[in-house]
Length: 229
Image 1 (cartoon, rainbow, N blue to C red):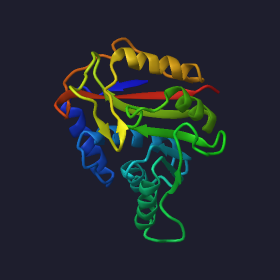
Image 2 (image 1 turned 135 degrees about the vertical axis):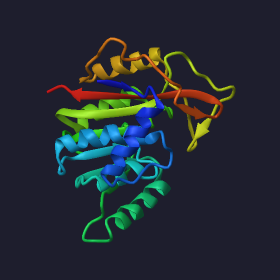
Image 3 (image 1 turned 30 degrees about the vertical axis):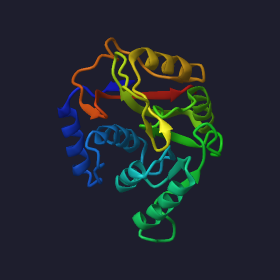
Image 4 (image 1 turned 90 degrees about the horizontal axis):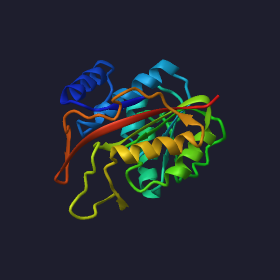
């Protein structure tokens, strides 16, 4: 399934949903749309579903999942310093009880170190736009996901090319906005590794340019893949 953020109203609805679940809001208001999509999928699997957040950043997604009641969470992050901060967050969110709220491992998205077929739901929230090797990423996701497992990828998007006047780096990594052609290539790459999604007419159409960053205006897209059984 493909979802595109097409209006600011969808962001407002996501914020209300998260508030109704007593889930902490993301500091960047638009990102609450991503979290609402993910939490609905996690909730459908049950509290004990094995979930891996790939590219955990500062832990916003793991924190939200834990607050929503998910109990089997693992985060993967490339940067050791950030991983250490995430470990501290895991203990503080878990109130220092017998085990942290979630587990953190330092690792590359193409080599997570997670056991084969150990994950029911993998999330990758606003990460692939930072120079990720997509072939390696999908290969690894296909390995760690159980048959029938799901992968939710969100990223910056606009149907036509949106390019900054100069190269932009975030977190020491390159950054881009995916266009429709690039998204189609992502879908083909994923399918080559047994990760498929349902298509509908007009899936890649956009509405409002909901997001504004570095002088560019665009929106978000979410790709919900299922590993072949």
